[in-house]
Image 1 (cartoon, one colour):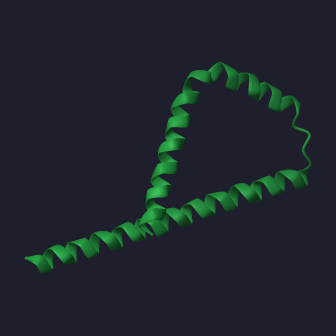
Image 2: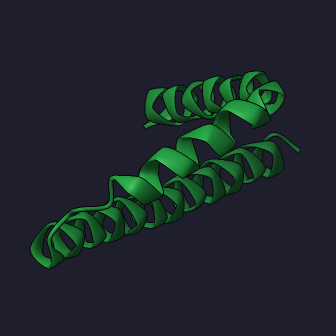
Image 3: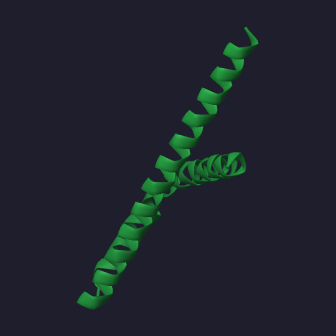
Amino acid sequence: MERLAERRLQKEEEIDQADEYQVGDEDDDEDQYDDDEEEDTRTDEQRMEEGRRMFQIFAARMFEQRVLAAYREKVAQERQQRLLQEI
């Protein structure tokens, strides 16, 4: 469980670094949006499927965050109990 938490923190740091790198590319983003508007020929079914996938990703992340928070809380309580026993 601890390794999972460490991996998750590493992934978040990598994402943050990638976001910082992309901040300077704002002009390129505007060009991409223009292209997206012209090529939006997806069917309603494709849009629904994309929405479902996005929701599943969101739900999975929320679940992962809850599990991670519960794990961290449990570890903190165990450490606190261990410290109290040493006293």
